[in-house]
Length: 518
Ligand code: KIV
Ligand code: ZN
Image 1 (cartoon, rainbow, N blue to C red):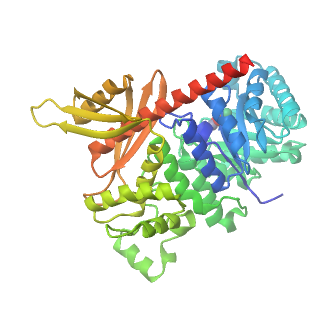
Image 2 (image 1 turned 90 degrees about the horizontal axis):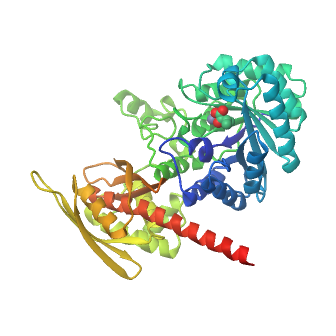
């Protein structure tokens, strides 16, 4: 048996569908490009029948990403499979992923079907998917709570229909490692045609065992692991990609398997996802948390100075963390800035460096020490500002004890300038109301958070907002040494995403109408 593990990333499907993790079209494309750099084997890009937005993003990812297989999820029905195939058919390496639940609990209470009916649905779904696409994955939802004899029967049947991968999800995160490992072992031992397909593990983290269960599956013969960046996903999340990849690498003698993950890209992938979704990770998160490589205790620091091997089982560099040291100050020039960005993995165009430099010099005036994380925050701000419809020109707030908070905001749209004022519960609320008055867009604020990017009293504050407009959710972010400015810009950033999405939709329907007219 090969000792190569295939990494199936479902950040854009199981991850994205969980609360607080939604991404818009452009954000999904950016994340997919980063996953390609990370060298995952399969990107599950979405659930095409779930929404028009999912369909469009799966289709675009299928067109743009050429080095990874692109999977689209579908229930075990012809309509779902057709929709998935429609989105996937342009991919260099398409995969239809179809699923149905196999546990008695799901059969009785959710599907209201018998074992025989579900078996038939599974067979028909795989047969149909296989008639469209060579690569077909079948998932037995809630497999870990399914009857093992029935599981063996259904796995054998779908392999006979041509399933290339059979996934055994611990859908509700109920399993414990030796139990989950023995399910995989039973399938490896008892399914006669198991050598014709690959077994896959897909574990949720409800009891905090998603990674341990996935690795138990691998040790018992599974060769595909389904996981997400930062472990985002339904409820407590999915198995975390970075933990799987680094466990396999760091404990290679115990695991005796390898992945194709470019671990240098792990940190950047984690950061990008946080910046796109506003879904922060805890400081002590394994591999990518702020404290993952910090040594505070004196005795540890002493050991580290003598030899890092005393307390460090892997290096920060191996996951792409460059030492976050003081890098630049207000006297640094464009060249130094460009070079530092290149060291951080960002090769910037002339236009991008000019924009980043303008912000950098302003921040360097306010803040003496500029760290790598500050530079990344500045850059992300500039990238998202490039396509903005509304630009913040001016704003002023007054607020204090026993005063009514008031804000006046000036926005530019093209060459036009608009200004309005509003009062609110606080200065940020007042500014948000003024923006709503100018844009005429009615916004529901779903989430708002601020986090400092680096250290010190003058640290840059990174603000994330999540808003809903007409039932659609949009994220916005911004970074600034002034948290009120950051809050206003983040809100505007989210509104600009909404305006951009509306514009794209209008353009699409125009193209469709033109096509129909031909
Ligand atoms: O957790 C699960 O069972 C799933 C399947 C759809 C693969 O996400
Ligand atoms: Zn799942």
